[in-house]
Length: 157
Image (cartoon, rainbow, N blue to C red):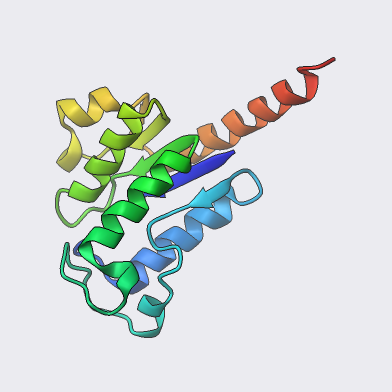
């Protein structure tokens, strides 16, 4: 089962973003095949930037405006579940809102951790399940995968 992880990136340091994704992946590895926006962008670890900006990268063809949008959209289409953690955003995350809209349009199971900044009718209505606590959302994802695995094992019995 594929899981796409989304978290606000603009306005955050490279150190913060990689630490966030490394931690989330550590918590969920073994449960899902994980896709996330920073996959294949390790060059930001080697040349860390103080704050990610919302557009205009020329450091790599992988980070052009069009490449970022198309690759993230493709990863959402490949995923079974889209997990969006809006907490800790420096500003409203247009990228995460786009990813949530694509997931909703495609009928993906969407799990959201909401904050006050993103508490909006569109976000709330596009999310299948809304949590206000990251740890509770992670626990749900693990339980969901466990139940899905049990269902698959007994499906043909």
